[in-house]
Image 1: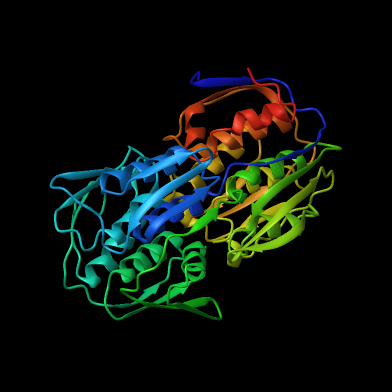
Image 2: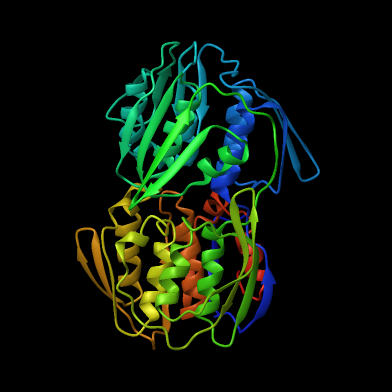
Length: 441
């Protein structure tokens, strides 16, 4: 695959049914939970992206074997704390913050030191948010300035904790839950509401986890040291990947799309709620429950009269990975869109809030920035004709996807670098664009 693409034609109107890449969050969690179950778990439709493949490599290094038969991964687990860890084990999480933070929670009883490393982007991300609670459990962790590389040495004397998770990070919450699985007694997490895939999967596995929601806090109770059996799971589509095709359709006149079999968990559909406030009219059809997750087909039509939004910050955690593409809609909406408390965007693969503002200004949109708040002055008549080059952004796949959608909906002549970043979450992104008519060189 070349390291760059050229787009110099807007996409023509289309009417398509598509499927997008499988849910990355669920793919990673299903592998890690299968590694702790008893028996052979069978996971179908697993996302074969870099982050997920690195998760498979990680469990392999920890003594968990798997094979792929057709489209199904068979993973042999031997129960909680059954990793066969050798001396001088190094786990490379690549670009995946989810893998890096969650797997630490499963290494808290390691009899030998395990070293966790990552790529350039991940090595700049703060791990204090998981190091602090793991130390409270009793884990021995070494890290310079709370960054990778991290060395963790487990202990047989873990103690349950009560922890207030105030960030709204599903990675932090899940790391603590995974640690609690191997800890005697009851661990309590008072968590700001965020993605709940880990809790739903454990409930599906009949693990003794209790979640009570009160106001904006989930009180999560996890009883440790309960074994659970292997399972079968079919991973649904990822709304974070679907988001780019939702916006491509919205900003393409007379176009329609149905995106099939997408996970529309209420903790993930912030983008749909925000865009519908802007007049998008997105519909969820054929909704059904699958092992606690809500699955649906997403129906979208092109719109000419989108309006600005004063986005409630309570929707931030449910749209944190989609704000870049939401900003593009705001750029084409009538009026001034206001977003606030978006500091968590800068804790992702790149400083996404900073880069989002830079991108909007690059395409001629007025943006007012007030620390972690921004106002976007929309231009419904925005059409581009200039030359643009988007350079590498620390392998941030979502910057790459955003650039492609902007080029296909706004016009101009674009050279977009770092095509390989798509492999992080959606390897078939460009192929799917071409299937609906995009001209990409």
